[in-house]
Length: 373
Image 1 (tube, rainbow, N blue to C red):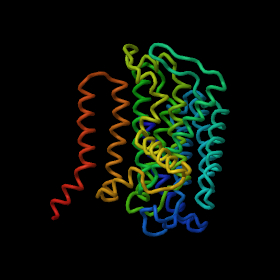
Image 2 (cartoon, one colour):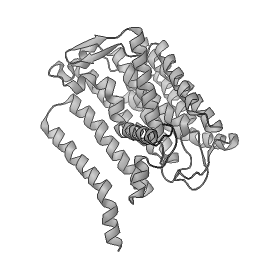
Image 3 (cartoon, one colour):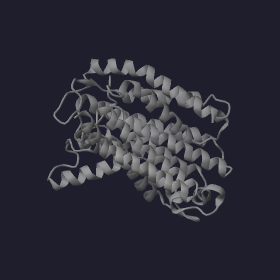
């Protein structure tokens, strides 16, 4: 655990320090978000949070190779992490080009698919579908299709939710911490090695996301841009995929203690990216349905995302982001904890917290209005 904290700290520090350099580079290259009708920022804002986070992840990886415990881990740990960073560099480069020249949607999708195919070719892919008490093996074509689908879906969900200062980085940072805890606890309880590429990647990802927030949280000094939102979505998805490749199928399907696993625990490595990003995925699905019904492209921009609606009902920019954080944390940690541990008390606690969060979203603006009248 201590070495993972070092990885987290290195990613955080390097990302934080390089963000200022990246911001100046964005100004020099003209990678600046102009003010449009659908935007909530009032002045042009530089992009390039992605390169800073990528370099933070690379620095954390380099340091991890020199740490006493992780450096003695099997080659698979660093091979998988290296593959994810190479794929992340590809998708970050696509995002950088988009931040500077504004690529069309199909070009970005092609870049996302290409990055996914690269990591599959380097060995990061689903090998089986975990089932309660057993598992279903996948052939190469099935594995590639499923892996690339999960990666592309996660990347676009994060990209869709990146509409308020600090929103995407904060939600993915929360999700990374939740997934790290899931992988680490599962390894400990099943007597498996604690040196895992999934834990290494999510520790670094959480650090990179928190490192960019001082620059990206409201009022933001810079945006992470498509280079950042696609990168962090990509790394989160690949972290979950890597877990199924390094963890024995029986350990995942049996869950904590090797008995009485729930359906949720068995499928968690597959569904966790979707569960952690439930709100972004819901927002993406609603946006696609809304735009398609209106005869528009699914990628056509609008100002009807969930975070926009929170602003419309009276929440401040900062509070809207914090409420989205709270919702993401409830879903991410709720899914992980309920899948690892049993007990109706846990369900009740998370149910109450969910109700309080929903009440805060709906009622706080009305309460404030009455107080200030």
